Image (cartoon, rainbow, N blue to C red):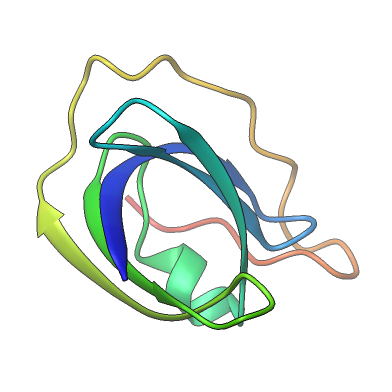
Length: 87
């Protein structure tokens, strides 16, 4: 288990990059779209990952931080992609 800030979200491939509290960028795979739907860039999270690096549990521990730069998010409703989160 480790914690950090959501740095990138790739809904097309179900991958998220976390910047740990020590500044290291850690790419992880997400088990399903439900986990990604809850995430926003800049959210502070605690992750539980398995031996293959797939997120099995995620807990938000802090609110969105506006200091994280925006990144493009692929269009929703295309095969293999999670739908966009509603705002």
